[in-house]
Amino acid sequence: MLELQKLNKYFFKGTVDERWAIRNLNLCVSPGEFITIVGSNGAGKTTLLNLISGTYLPDTGKILIDGKDVTNLPAYKRAHFLGRVFQDTFRGTAASLTIEENLAIAYLKGKKKGLRIAIKDKMRRYFREKLAEIGLGLEKRLGDRVGLLSGGQRQALALLMATMGNPKILLLDEHTANLDPKTGEKIMNLTTSLIAENGLTALMVTHNLNDALRYGTRTLLMDEGEVVLDIAGEERKKITVNELLERFSAARHKDFVEDRALLSS
Image 1 (cartoon, rainbow, N blue to C red):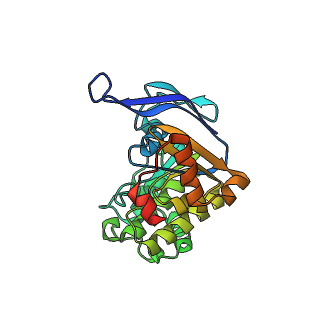
Image 2: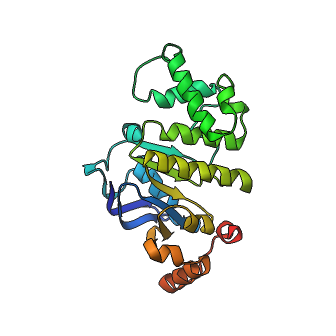
């Protein structure tokens, strides 16, 4: 499904501030895997998602999706087979447009049709049906502008939009970080439901170590642009947060430092 081969990304290359954001990274992701990614600030988590999405292009290495080399493909050309939800609850949706207009943009991705022409009764029924499954009452507010919604409602809408059309890969970049714990749990329940329902392959960056082990099927712990630990299967089911931290310390000869991650655990 997704294969990263000897991927490298530098920032400020050729200057005194040059640093390695992703370092010789190799990763194979099988169809249907739900990978959680944790690491301290600057570990390369978001940079990794940006490389997969095409927001950044690597300095060296290859990115293959379904065997196709997309290494130098820009983000807009990857958009039809990638879905993404961001930490910022205003990204991924258009605040000045209505709920139904936002959903129509996602539903009609790649089709050249105006929104007013495209939004028919059949499409509205479909939107109401999908929104009703979320359980936030948004199916009754199709004409409301998205900027009026709460952060949790916007993230729920962004998730629904990102999964429309069954993308090959869903990228989640700390998408519950700006939500209160109760709302964050609701969004995570919706996330796992949509991933399972659509049989999606997903990569989720999180600062919450408990969530990293609670959700998904595989966990990566990153440091300085490298994957330090890659845990799946029975090993992952049995490991605790403390054991994860101990293994990180043994591998890197230093303590894991990420205040948000440790506090949330």
